[in-house]
Image: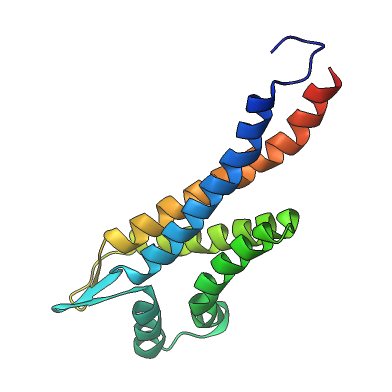
Length: 158
């Protein structure tokens, strides 16, 4: 780009399209990942929702952990809400909801992957990894959107 000239139309278009598309792919990957196996107990695979319920029952969780596990089933709704907000033109709110969803999904994935196997159960990799990949894509999309909000106006002034 030449200093003193506005960005070519195609360049602005890519900067406007890439973050939402990347974010939407990441949000869909988060939801898909939550339904994939997260925990194996004996011969039974459990998705993230079943695993969360089993952990709450077996360990008798309390406090913040219990509340977080209780709210986990809302992750899919939050991901859908982020996409809907963005599509309805509420891009800032959609980006915030997407970022918070990615933060929760990423934390849950890392927590699951950091858990060591016991003689009762072990973490399966596919569900947490797909969810973590989705969370990473959303985080990248949020970062790109934030950077374009800061960098693009400056480039337009040059």
